[in-house]
Figure (cartoon, helix red, strand yellow):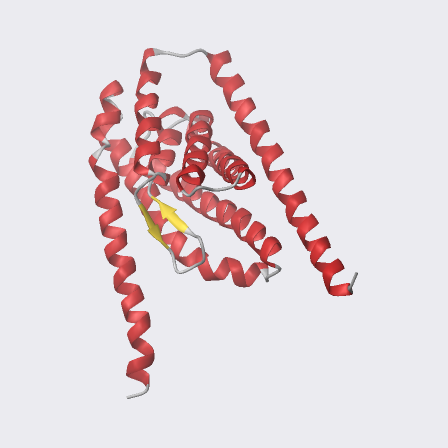
Length: 253
């Protein structure tokens, strides 16, 4: 066996170990979230979460292809953020796990990819929600009863944490599998994903502030905004890509 083949084998082993650690960690945080939810007890207001979860699965079909191999941005992230704002990190973790599994299924992903995407989304949202909760004033566990000023820093931290954690997990897995540089892999896709995460978190916060007193009607009140967000981001991304493609032509004139 050549040295090159041995090195490639070690790299593949590292990738499998990394994916395994992410999957085990994701299963652990989902189990912990379920335990907390059932320990605290379910209330009538939690019925609206079922609507948000269903919308997350449906709206996950609205995605935009990034200029990066096999990478898409789904606007279900906005509803995941909304779950964290309304119900806290445990429900947000479950919403993220559902979205990760559904997105892999739609793309006909392998069992390993489904497990990684499901666990990776659950893990990154769980940790991001923990950061969000630590920054809430007066020990609050969700955004209820807080002013826009009180939510500004926690929501910003939620979006930033999710952006960094999720893109880092994906870039690490891709870099190990493709035997590529992590930094180059991350830098190629992360700026495009950042815009979607920031837009999603701000939209979720705006919708939350507008409809947080509607209870079960919340699920229906948020229905239009992911479609508008999808159309807006797709238009902006298309314009940026066209500018990027025409720039070299203008330089040679």
